[in-house]
Length: 267
Ligand code: HEM
Ligand code: HEM
Image 1 (cartoon, protein in one colour):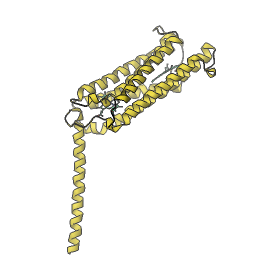
Image 2 (cartoon, helix red, strand yellow; image 1 turned 45 degrees about the vertical axis):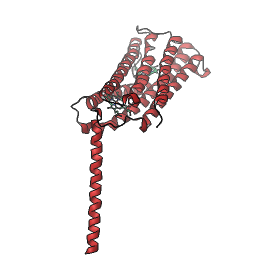
Image 3 (cartoon, helix red, strand yellow; image 1 turned 30 degrees about the horizontal axis):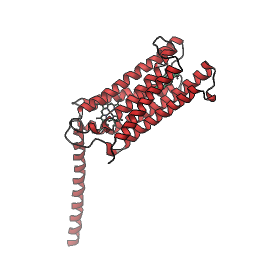
């Protein structure tokens, strides 16, 4: 089995590059940052959305694929996984409030674009996933059978929301370049000025980061081995038990049919 570390290192580097890229874009071409209802307040929106709902999210998602987390009690890693997701939720809520405030201050209607619909839907799904994650996987009173049923749904929804988040980022970058270059700056997007070249590359970088995260998550051999000891993995023996019950049933059925066949021959 190949180690997951080279892939995880690539993931960390691409994530850092995304955060640096989105900060440089807004500092270099958009006048930097402020919290005063101006265009500089808007600049927090892409920075916080990319840092929170893409990079921190991606890091939190691949946490269980770090071999260091495989030994011993799973609870500290669960807390870190949930904590990283909470931090990313907080960053995205602040990022959303930046753009909502700017729009309200300038009298721009809210939620008119496909970007805003997909974006808000993504954040709502993400918040729901977090609440359900805490209730089901963290609270000791949640039944094991519920964990067994919800784990595959949790993993599927987690990877799907990450893909939705990329869709929101790509549409946001495109929309922003069209607005800013064509209407504010007077330079045309189609002439591919340096800012457009940079922001387009940022979009590609975000895509690459998420592809690496999805690659890491899709590799079954990098999953935490099943120790059957930690409390978090308590539902795994249960699954095995269920599987064994199924196998016993099959054996009994085969035995019954063989007996029936021989008694038929004798009679
Ligand atoms: C996961 C990432 C993102 C989410 C969830 C998201 C979400 C949203 C939402 C809900 C709005 C609507 C605000 C309102 O109606 O007042 C909005 C507006 C906007 N966002 Fe994003 N955004 C994301 C990333 C980005 C990025 C990376 C950019 C690039 C600059 C961007 C550019 C814009 C622009 C230009 C607007 C104003 C126009 C509009 O409402 O469509 N967004 N975003
Ligand atoms: C919005 C928040 C969340 C998202 C997007 C999310 C996403 C994910 C993803 C993508 C995985 C798959 C990881 C893998 O296959 O290695 C996963 C696994 C898991 N998550 Fe979350 N998660 C969130 C919140 C939570 C919370 C709050 C908890 C509670 C502690 C939690 C507990 C777990 C557990 C127990 C697993 C299974 C790990 C395993 O045994 O393979 N998640 N999550």
